[in-house]
Image (cartoon, rainbow, N blue to C red):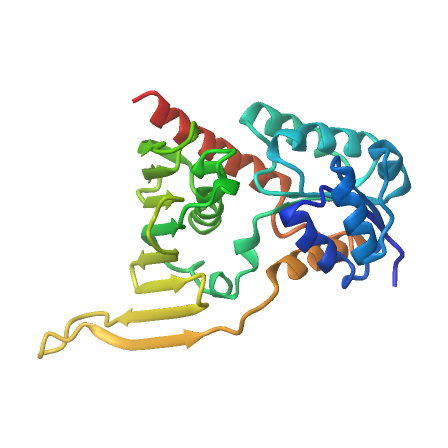
Length: 311
C-alpha cells in the first residue's frame, strides 16, 4: 500500500469526525493543527495523534492535507498547500466567494495535484446510480430543513445547508443557469437563516431549493421529475420511491407502470469520501467532486445570496 502522509487542519466539531475516519483509511495520519491549544491537547490524548503547533511544519511534513477549518480560512490554506505541491481535501464550501474559488481553480489547472471538495451528499447511497443520464430532467425540488442550532449561524444558510443541494442539482442537471429568483430572512442572527430559490436553466429545466435552520423539524428530501419517472429521495432515512409512467394511458386511465420503494443501507459517507480521495491520489484518477465542481457550486451559491440581498 502506498504510504501517503496526511495532516488535518481543524480539530473542531467536524474535524473530530474526519480525524476518527482518517485513522481508518490507508492514509498515514501524521498529525493535526488546531488553534485551540486546550482542545488540541484533548484530541492528541484521545487519538494518540501528534498535535502540531506550527501549521507550516505540518504541511511540509505531509503529502496531502484535510481542511475542516471555518470557511473563511480555506482559501489561504489551499493556496499554501498547492504552492508546496500538496494534495488537498477541503470541506464544503471550497472557498468563501467566487473570486477565491476561481483562483484555486486556476492554481490546480495544469498540475497533477488532487483537490477534492467535501460535498458529502455525492456519497449518499440514495443519490447514486439513479440512471438519469438517458432521461430529460424537468424539475427538481429540494428541501433541507433543520431545527435551530447557533453553531451553524456563522455563515448564511445558503453556504451552510443549501450548498449541498446546489452541488447535487448541478451534478444532475449539467446545464448553465439562466435566471435566479430568491428570497430569505435572518430572524435571530445577522446571517440568513431561511432561504428559498427558483432556478431556470438554459436547457429549460427548473429547480426549487429551500433551506432553513429555523424549522420545527428535520427534513432532507429531493424530488425529481423526468420525462419518464418521478423519483423521491429521502437523504436522511436513505429511502427512494420511484414511479415509472406508461408511454400512454390505458383504457382505465391508468398511467403508472410501476412503483418501486427501496431502502438503502446506511453508509459512512465521511469515510467513503476520504477513502476515495486516497485512491484518487494513488491511482491518479479524478476525484468524485472536483475543484471545478467546487467552483461552480460556490458561484451559484453566491449568485443566490446576491439575488436575495439585492431584493
